[in-house]
Amino acid sequence: MSHPLPKPSEPYKTWATFLKAVWMHGMSVQNMDKTIAASHVSDAAKSILEVFTRRNEAKTVRPSSFLACARQTYYSVQGEDAGNMPDNIGSTFAVGHLLHELSYAAVKSGIPSGFAVETEKNVALPEWWPDDKAKFNQRGHVDMFITVPDRAAHEAYLSPDAPDRMLIDFKTMGSFSYRKHGKTVWGEDPDAFGYLAQLAVYADTLGLVSDDPNKEGVGAIVAGINRDSLTQPLFPRYIDSKTLNDELARVKLAVQMAVDGNDPGEEFLTRHGSDAYFHCGRAGKPGYCAFKAVCKSNPTRDGD
Image (cartoon, rainbow, N blue to C red; front, side):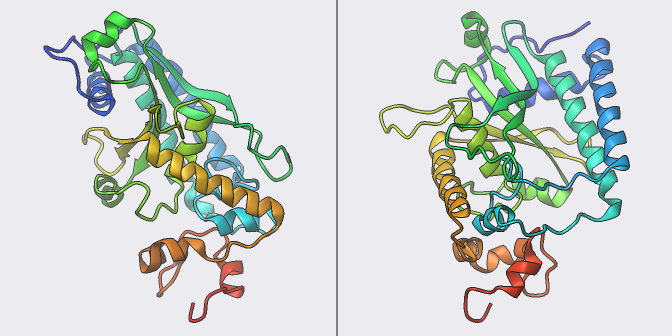
């Protein structure tokens, strides 16, 4: 039996504060719905087994991979091999799957009546997305999409100017990344893991961004889970529509250049300078770039 979040004395001012409260409430052993939890634990078990029994490196461009850096998009489309993940990476993914599914169960258990929660929602990709099935995934899924069909529920729990729907992407993070997540300036700081690019594409296909200056978009949330300290609260960061729309324009350009066969050069380094070394593998750092070997063998800037 669910025990939803009690009605506040005043509505939550933002979706981020509301989501944090719902998650914290639902994660309590006093409030977690046993049936909901059982379903999501079962889903987690299937995903955990899979990460230990088959390799799952991305071979095609998808919203969650190869978009943060335009050269990664280019090399993937050109058929270059991305580096393999370590064989012992399974435990990291397993913890991520478990914490995602428990978060789904917590939100579904704690969400008030009048809110509708969809998890692992399958979506078609936007019309501008290439239809080359060999190089681009043709469908995707979003972690969570919450809508508020009941206006009375919206008025009770959310500020009147809060939108009636919200896209949420959960990310499991170590303690360092969790703290850094709270300081990230979205749209300016390096984002080699592609959180912003992924959200921008999904927000576009769900109609949550707007390039019309007279029409405000909805935006989306990146919700950080501290896997090193599981008593820490959920850390939702709201990303506004303009930031998502700016990123969307960059992604569209990167995809078009890749399809046209135009090498964009090391634009991630150009955008972020030495701050990108941690991600790109410069200055003695190993980096996370899946194509760092071919990038290194084909430099495009003197001195790099």
